Image (tube, rainbow, N blue to C red; front, side, top):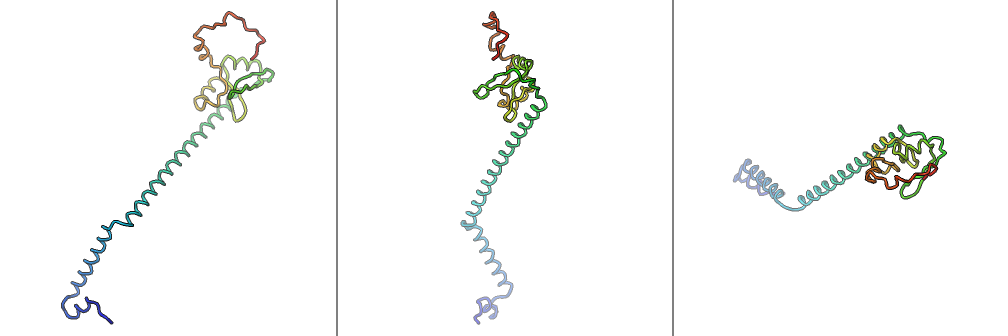
Length: 182
């Protein structure tokens, strides 16, 4: 078998074992330093991996934000539902129709005369619960409006109507018939 150069030099006595070990160690260090300094595939893979990790983190952040918004929306919807269910007022016998506008369509519910008067004077409001209309006190309607305006369908706010007219009613001199129901 062919002997390596190191074995031949060792056999002739030109070098000793310590020098051979030191030479191998130096060569190993040089090779590892070359690999570290060499720009190439390893750095490119690292960059791609970092970029992919950053994109994943951004997607996760967006997903978490969307989940948080959905949870907040559901919590608000649950609060509105609870407010309506606990404070809904009876519609009465349902013998008097009350017309109101919802999404540019005229809708009608049947209520008692006392309930109709409360709605007309702004003491009660009409709100939407799922696909039904319910009547709640004005204070509750304001709480619902703060959470989501779309759930309050009709609220005759007496403060707004007074400020719109400027305090003067141009038709104050005219008597409104008792049997007029809109």
